[in-house]
Image (cartoon, rainbow, N blue to C red; front, side, top):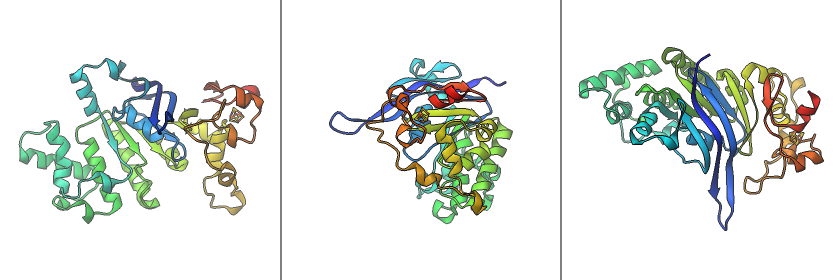
Length: 319
Ligand code: SF4
């Protein structure tokens, strides 16, 4: 099995929310991403998954906890090591239009990271490399001098991916990279990410609110609720035998083509509780139909339950 590339140890992040109040966006998350694998993070909007992704590549400082890259904590790295680490950890954003400078041509957008990191010597070599990258992500070379607004959403996301892979990173955080795209284009982008992973031995931290998309691309999945991981495990095991009630609800809420299999799960869930004043005990208890007194008084810890790790008192009792 490949070694651990990136690791979170008990990460937390609180954002000020006025009058001595804080949003507890990430609360004690630990996870590992191995070389060449994809870890999917899934959960509803506001569960802290994007904040976690940004902390994992050093874009946001955690309030507490550590991130380790190849076994060394960010906090212990000197300036040169931190710089080298930044090159290895890249990001693909949800909205490719917002993340691409509208005044720059595709040539200049993809050349930017190459020039920042001095990958090529001279303009000619840089342009040659830009054309190779355009080909790698499926954007025709004749579009070299076009601007972002002259492309479709899918093509813009391909350009965003070309920028991310330009400097040969070890890991890319993909933050909802397909959620602004049509379903057919989504599949093309997911297939492109898989193909690039195979060719370049990339690791991905793939963030999405869409559990079907996460299933399609991930080797392992972590389900997040209110800043915490409530279930994690190998993708097939988690989807075949979901143990946490929240994972089950997410799966039941996936639209089914067969009307006899449709459920009201999405409606049953209601609104998530406040991340400023999270519930005592289990963070999911205000939405959980199985909640007991114990769930209010004692926070469940992630524990191995069959093939996954689950944070739920009910699953401990039933194993
Ligand atoms: Fe539901 Fe209790 Fe399990 Fe939380 S610990 S998911 S409230 S049964």
